[in-house]
Length: 223
Image 1 (cartoon, rainbow, N blue to C red):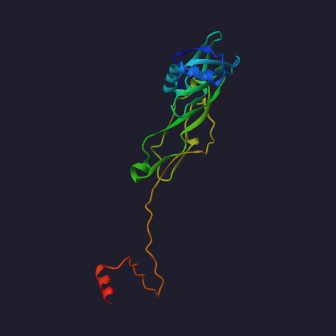
Image 2: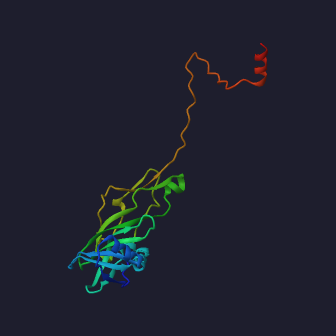
Image 3: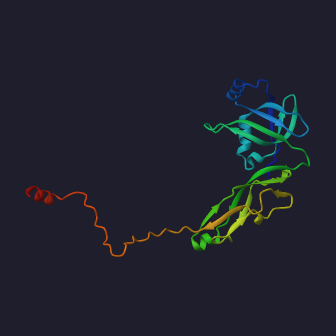
């Protein structure tokens, strides 16, 4: 389930909204964030990069539940809704947080982890292919799985595992189409090269002579 370790991130109201203000905040180790949803107004704030990065690195990652306490506004229980990462430095540069409302379900994306060695791999040297690596689910925030484990140990060659094969508790609803393929076991066959066919009545072509040998050149010169 999603982590809930009573984590509190203390933040401050964001005054400037320009690019230069954002750059100054990031140089100071802060990240511009937006908090919205629930019963409160949308709030722009600045939160410590180190604390947000630690949450994203945790087991639940972006599905972690935590409290953001904004100076002058107060605390709100939130989750990451969206985040922006610097493509060069791999650093968080902006985040959107969604307020959680008691009793209200939310939709989130959860990774799929395949468990076990398929029969088709173990006995027939097949290759396991995972075609779907995450699914969208709807549930209470505290019921969000860190990951959904799918047992593939009974999967034979050319057999297919679908979303409908996942066994989930009643409090978690998978939103993907039931027939969506998760994984399959295939066989890689070496392609046979067919021998060249010579038309009836024709002799095989002679190999092309690239150059004359030394002896042939000398004989040709004497002629």
